[in-house]
Amino acid sequence: MVKVWDPETETCLHTLQGHTNRVYSLQFDGAYVVSGSLDTSIRVWDVVTGGCVHTLTGHQSLTSGMELKNNILVSGNADSTVRVWDIRTGQCLHTLQGEVIHTIYTKVCGHPFKLVDSAFSATPVADRCIKSST
Image (cartoon, rainbow, N blue to C red; front, side, top):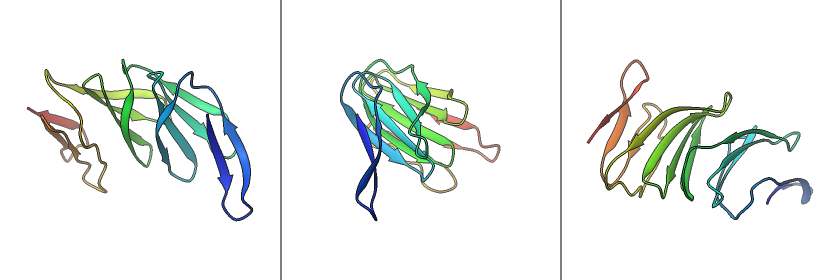
């Protein structure tokens, strides 16, 4: 469960319930809270209503790290994959994987978007598509 607080009044605005196991990663962009859980799902929550907008599925184990930039979410996972999501539509745009990938760092750094991993890196080119190089 995740709680959303108003820091000025110190009151709880919402309790976000839906994951069936512990939440290990969170992102917040002012409009959405994104939570990654040991239940293998990622949930996108509307911060105003407290409602779950999307449940992102596809990872096979714990979501170990996430980074959110605008509507693009990058999630690293213990299943040796990195996924790129559009949180507005709930669609997985790209899945990056390798034979021995263990994600140690996943970051969306301004523009251009850069993804760094212990086994590979992927950066978008001018057309904003993600190209991987192993």
